[in-house]
Image (cartoon, rainbow, N blue to C red; front, top):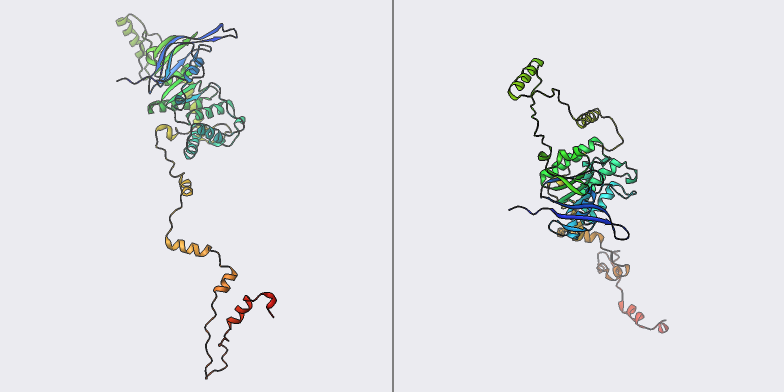
Length: 390
């Protein structure tokens, strides 16, 4: 039994009207597509092709003009859908006077995430995007690339089921770009569903399972990466380096058997991105200092499915909610230590005079003998009114 698509669009149309409600721009023009669970889906096209409008329709930020669109089987405007989505807009808008820790904590609160889990996720995400060294700097001081890294962390704070990234590598250096692509592949292997919108074709080519190409609000091509990129008119054979005479023999064989010739013989080239990453890695090995964002760390544990528990961090909260049991002997000792003393009057009333020993014949003048006190005289004085006392 096939799974229900995460996003399903049929005949989707979005027309922007002017002040007089006249059609001004047909941004999305009758497109049909679906995003399946556990896949990385690419949305390609030049500027103004309808990519951002399509994303805003999926998020419920815009209302469709015509057609059908569902997210998790519901209307995109359903609030319950929002908690399952992580979104990185084309431009990252952050509060300038908050630092990264405060920023991620704020967004975590919006999702109702417990405090202990927010702190753990914040630490893991800042390490992952390479901002742990700038965690207490104001966001207003960040470069565009550093703000973009923080925006990616913000989009992941709720561990979303469906992640939407609009131009995620815009403003990032090649190291950050490589890290974002590796992160997307990690999340894809975990089973996350990702919508990636970009005009940087190399980024989409490296990570997407399927894609559509938009132009003028219409889908011009759709399919898997292999289906769209495979060149069926050529054959590529990779072998270790050959001698020139061997290449001549192969060319003669191809001419005789296939009626064609070898078009080009060249040594393979690595990507400029790979060379750049290699140079930066060497600089890091040499411990060259930098004041910018650091290379990101490993993918945050909670994004890879690690179990989260707030038990350790919530110990203090538990102790505050209930009185811990103490041994009886300890309770008594503490009570005796902190119990207030009786008042002076109570001590005097409760005090007992030492026993009076009658004088003995052997020691008639013993200093230990105490004279007896006639309490009746004192009581009589206390009972008489003051004017009758003499």
